[in-house]
Length: 212
Ligand code: B12
Image 1: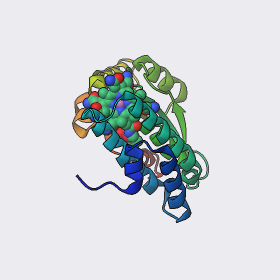
Image 2 (image 1 turned 135 degrees about the vertical axis):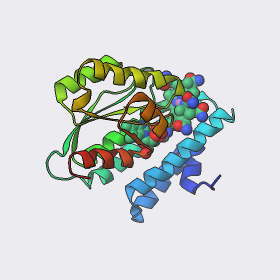
Image 3 (image 1 turned 90 degrees about the vertical axis):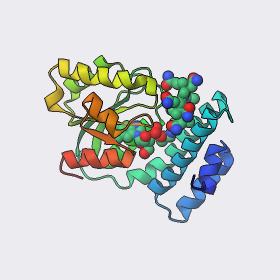
Image 4 (image 1 turned 30 degrees about the horizontal axis):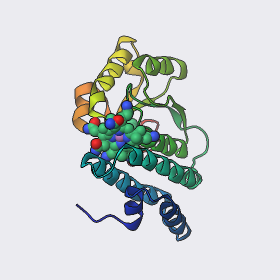
């Protein structure tokens, strides 16, 4: 495994003061905000691996999530700096039913807003019917589902099926992402696109409205 940067290691170790100081240091040194985020993501992945190896426990995982949210709040204005004029399009985002992970989903929301999209954020544990209602109400060009738990694959399928049953499938593009997602999942569930990162998602959405 590639060696972690000092910042990624601090995130993985859930050392909040060190994380905050390093983020500040990097921003002041002119490191682009998306690169700072990418390092923090590496740290979160390592934290998850430590959890899987039982080297840390649920409270650390939860605290890690809180630290990451603080970092995102800090980076938000720097990502907004790339905001384009007007509204590029409309996007609906949510973490699928039974999944309460929202850090990655929030990053996609941030990136989309940063590139001029109006984003309807449905939050976490979103039932298929809520996605359907949001498509009817907001007429988005793209819907994004975030899934971090392999036990939630079925929620992705059920969401796509509900959109089809409502007769709305032809009106929207569907993208899926999150640590449990893959191109295979996108293919099997009938999504149009799998985004490995929030940036991939924003690029795909931008491409749909001619802003990519
Ligand atoms: C933090 C965390 C938590 C926090 C979540 C806090 C929060 N507010 O989100 C808490 C403590 C609540 C939590 C709970 C649980 N967790 Co958890 N968690 C994590 C951890 C460590 C980090 C996730 C994270 O935020 N990563 C950082 C973000 C930025 O990454 P990301 O979400 O993947 O998003 C990136 C891309 O995937 C992409 N992306 C994400 N969504 C989307 C959507 C679209 C459309 C696109 C294009 C892109 C995209 O963009 C982002 C960056 O570019 C992961 C480890 C991991 N490897 O993912 C485990 C992990 C996901 N959790 C896991 C588990 C098992 C659980 C629990 C079941 C634990 C328990 N025993 O209770 C519960 C489940 C709760 C539930 N019902 O959802 C497992 C899942 C295993 C599996 N195969 O299913 C993991 C992988 C840890 C592990 N290795 O065991 N967790």
